[in-house]
Image 1 (cartoon, one colour):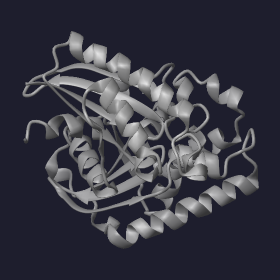
Image 2 (tube, rainbow, N blue to C red):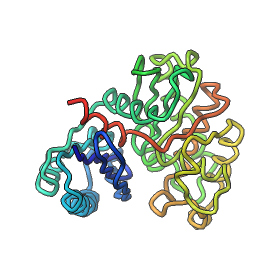
Image 3 (cartoon, rainbow, N blue to C red):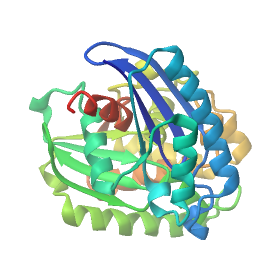
Length: 301
């Protein structure tokens, strides 16, 4: 069966087309910033819905061209929080022909765990999977299945819009963001027994961008990033550097996606604080994530 998985997050909307069983055929990402302002207003902005509509129209054509038989679209943090999510759902049905599943944080965590651990050896578990998104961060513990999970409302977009408003952010802004992240991570650690993990796994765009910087790549190279390792010291160094840069300086980094320039400081800070607060000496970086989990889930039903 040829399937299409679509992950609609707070910052990006992504498409994966693959055969089950079989190979990946197409993977694509567009930054649409669906969660623009949602933390402040409680609603999805009209311009954000319009950007997402444009991306989904393009994806619908790709799915048709590739002969996709089944599509599953999952919407996460920004849509969960929006008062006008019914308007968003109606737009998706009209544009894509399927209804988006606005999933809970626990469902998001389970799909992320499934995708993140595809290429990992179970003997290296239990795994602590950290999915740092635009609106939320999930901590998930498990080996072959989820044993404990918690989703908390700190993500690179939400943190940036709440705190990191100057260019570059001021010390006071970084301190406020750090306090916000630490409080959220402590909440997650009350539910997820982090100390049981043998291997920490980081995923999503903030983490993979930090990994690209750690590897000193001239451009973003997924094959080099996948299953690379980032030490706690290196993650802290990169987060500190990014938070001290202006927007223009971040934009000049060869690995930086244009849509991530504004929010990478917040994402890197979440990774840095997670590694320090949870005593993680290094993280294995995965390019496989919730998108892969969504695709694989269609083979189970």
